[in-house]
Image 1 (cartoon, helix red, strand yellow):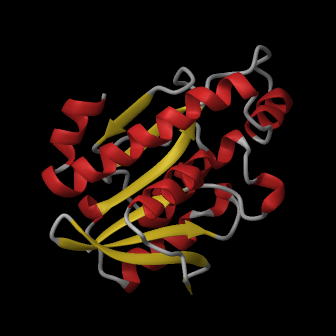
Image 2: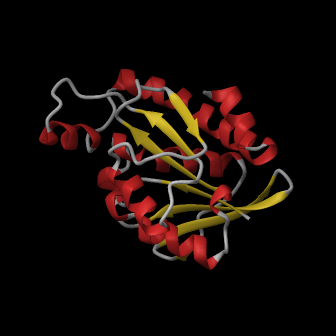
Length: 187
């Protein structure tokens, strides 16, 4: 069983925020594989499907990004998912808009949602897909919060749409060929 988690904040108010690019990537990936988020478990909307010869569980935590660790931990335990089979998709301020970076493991890098997941799992040894959203001109805490909770501009939206497709292709590669192949092809 593979567990693919997209990070985002629940509700229509946040749907197109930069912070919700993980949800958007997972939604596109689910549509591509005809998977519906028709169940709820561990405070997440989930969907299950067969891909690349195995079963995959897609999950969108229905609590705020910054506390998503308890949801991911619950799903990992419930489905007995090895951390090497967990992939988390999330926004990254430190990457230019539209840049995709796949890593086998690593720190939270200042992302509070990833920090929550690492803390809840007691490990940073799990794959992740970082999606670049760029940084605001001002780099203070209030500006960053406003930026990540803001929507993409129309020009940024064009870039993100093609990035979402690239992330889906990278996840397909990860499922079929493994993390090293996905890193080699998509980083």
